[in-house]
Amino acid sequence: MTRLNGKTPVITGGAAAKRGMDAPTAVLIGVTGGLGHALARLLAAEGFRMVLAARREYDAAALTGRSDGSAIYLRADVTDPASLEKLAAFEHLGRIDAVVNLAGISPRKAIEDYTPADVDALLAVNVKGPIFVTQAFLPGLRKQAGGGVVVHLGGAMDGRVALPFMSAYAATRGALASYVQGANRELAGTDVVLSFFGPVPSNTESESPYFDMWRKMGVALCEPDVVAREILATIRQRRRAHIMGGGLLKMLTLANAVSPSAADAIGLRRFATLIEQHRPR
Image 1 (cartoon, rainbow, N blue to C red):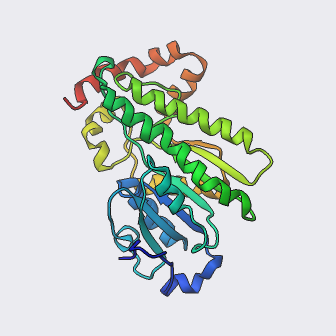
Image 2 (spheres, helix red, strand yellow):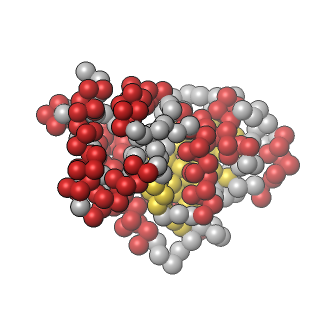
């Protein structure tokens, strides 16, 4: 395992040595979930050098499927700016082409059931976290030739579609979408781009309590590998926003942008009953 043990880690050896410092480098934060695993393996297969980060200890080789030293693992927490600043040190990497922030939490509760602790955690991870990640990496991205892209994962759809029994959570995703939009306007004329990435419901352990709900809604679950490929496309095309979704989700997103009441009539009201039936008690 390659990890931080009181010394600055170095990506070396094997395929990494063949690719050298010309290989693109990505930092994946909050990488231990199903989407993180899929993205780490895809980027490894695509020749990226990687820094993998999350709050708990993990093995870079296990995440990427490679043991050639092309990836390192560091502990970092999106709610801790100091740990992110340490993660953003560029000296041992040469440059960073992409930062992907996968960290997020999504409790599903009735309005009155969100506790102060729930709200604090949502704001810390889903709103402050992306801001802290951006602030940590922005100085280095601005200085280096070609800039770079910072991808923040939002919830399903575009951050403006607020589902019932997810009101406080929805508020944080709307805040993230607005933050990315405002930051990109401020960064106009630079080579740095922020991206809001809206994945579809995926076949991951964290989403497993809601598999039956999505089936009843007629929403097909997406495999993590497919989501990972869309994230890679977002990185390469430097998209400011990319929203995944089949026909129903795209229709609801578009309808909600024009008329929330129309989106309710099309299908959002039905979510209330289904989320109430499937949310954890």
